[in-house]
Image (cartoon, rainbow over all chains, first blue to last red; front, side, top):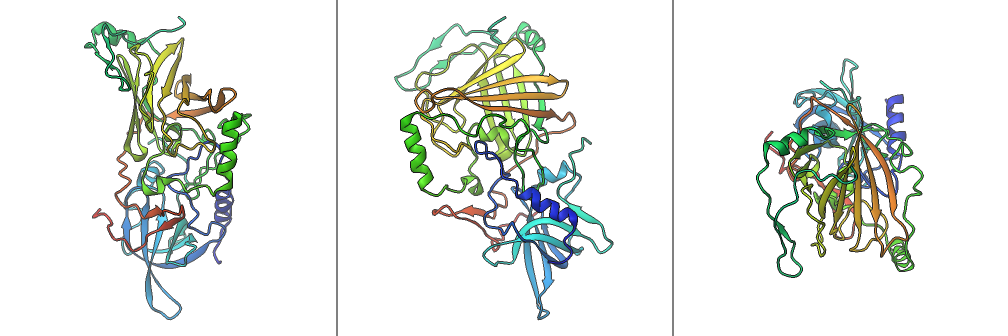
Length: 134
Length: 268
């Protein structure tokens, strides 16, 4: 668990906030398929970016310990949500180098729930910027 | 001005066969109808729950949402149930709670559909308020032409709604609510009525107070509290086709999963 920034720790704390008993208002699904208490970081090259509802999916090629390239799928917030928070379908492009911090799937599949990402130049991509009326 | 009906009470109120919804003939709106509409508080536009006004956090959306921030303050989280429904609640607690079917793209019913992390757009026309809901691309139809609530409504996700104005507040009453996932963690009967009070609290802020009434299941009306929404004048409602690239699912045992190998993925 390297590269876990204070911001990510904060996000984990936020993720732990359980909503009230009467009005379940999560985006579209529960997060029980993900290991929300832990994060993992992978670094690789973007293979494909799904700018789709109900979730964006970032497909990233990552070399494993044996040097074999494997494709991971990372689920993010929806394009609707992100476009109102400064993202566009070109924020992450095919070929981009990225380190992604995410909550891994519990079943061990190569996927997870996006927490943050970092470009080689240090730029951090979060899905939590405040709403801004453009 | 206790009860001001927007629009007009229709001349003919026709009741169909037993059990079916009554049909109401609506006349074409006149210039006067549009003029009277313009005198009402302007609820029109695109609204989204204000930060802290929703009481929910999205794990990778990060809206910190203060659980106590107006979402359900002082409500204790559940209504007082009648003995029969308290027993139902106990029976339900003995079984694991199913994952919301929203993961399979089934929209939640009222009231949860009004509290999604996506905006809604309110449209006012003579005799009707329409709420366009971005999440799952849904719509609510609220008739403000003076028609009564149906006596024997079909059970639906969003029920059948009528509205009237009490001074500056739009009061929407909804009946005919089916037993479907609607964000309620307690049992309710087919007599459930949802009462929503829409009121502007500032130039671009709207409060919605939601109260549940169920004489069969609850010993008293239950207030879910008042939520605050912000109007975003530059926003438009975006497309949301849940089936476009949905890799989430809940199986028939109620367990959530994710399909990674499903390149049904869009051509975008």
